[in-house]
Image (cartoon, rainbow, N blue to C red; front, top):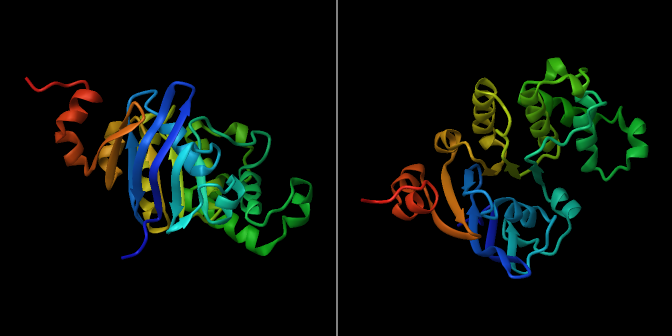
Length: 250
């Protein structure tokens, strides 16, 4: 049996008396979309930040394909092909779409920004850049200034930047936040298509999207996992209904 793409084991994080992630166990399989849902303040973003290396857990382990990366910094996890997007778009608005993606591609080469111009002609960087742009449908917008993009296009750009890192594991923190209905549908279609490239852990509040595209769903409430299963399993789970959806059996 192959190792999961990502495995979180007994992960804990507290700030003073507030426990934010409480003995969290979770696994992500190759070529899977695994959604992480829960109410505001459940600890979802804190958990993602521990997986990406931006926060250190108090205890527990994070493994990628069986390799312990718990104490590795962000840049080492990136080199092991883990990438992340954020709730708030994180792009360089004065740069072109292509240059934003090219800068991301350069991160895998460990190139300093001051060396950027010397690498604009690097064949492998340019190939990664163009492939990522094509994958998200932004090739025709490659020379546009990022500040001129719609919010939905910026979301696509962020995903292109993540793909330029050639990830095997992709962490997505609320990619549908702030986008309209048509853009949400386009993003959902895109994410579903990316399963052939990488495994995805998706934090999302749009339950229609979650139930449509997730292979499995984990529910986090007050820092603890209360359920994991298929969309149908989660919909029928009485604890999830009462703790998250606000429904009670009567």
